[in-house]
Length: 80
Picture 1 (cartoon, rainbow, N blue to C red):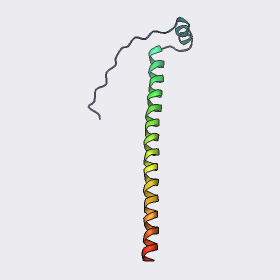
Picture 2 (cartoon, rainbow, N blue to C red):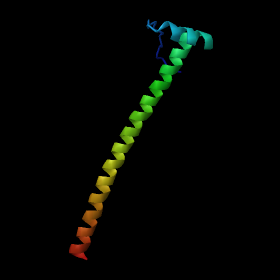
Picture 3 (spheres, helix red, strand yellow):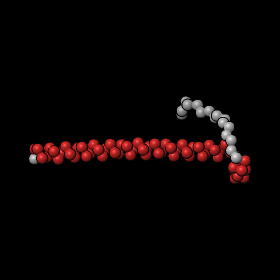
Picture 4 (spheres, rainbow, N blue to C red):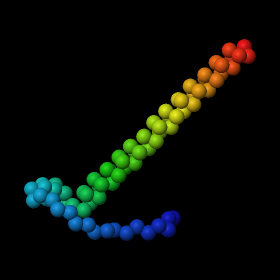
C-alpha cells in the first residue's frame, strides 16, 4: 500500500462554445474526458521518452560492439 497522497486540483480552461456543445452532446462528464485525454497524452510522452532512451542505448552498444570487433581484429592480426 502506498503512503503517497493524491490530490485533485481544479483548473479552468477556455474552449469555444461549439466545442463545449459538441462535448456535452457526447459525454456525461467533461472532467473525466479531459483527464482521460491528458492521461493518454502523458503515457504517450513517457513511451516516447523510453523509446528515445532505448535507441540511444542501442546506438551506444553498437559503437561499443564495433570497437570490440576492431580490437579483436587487431589482436588477431598482431598475435595470429
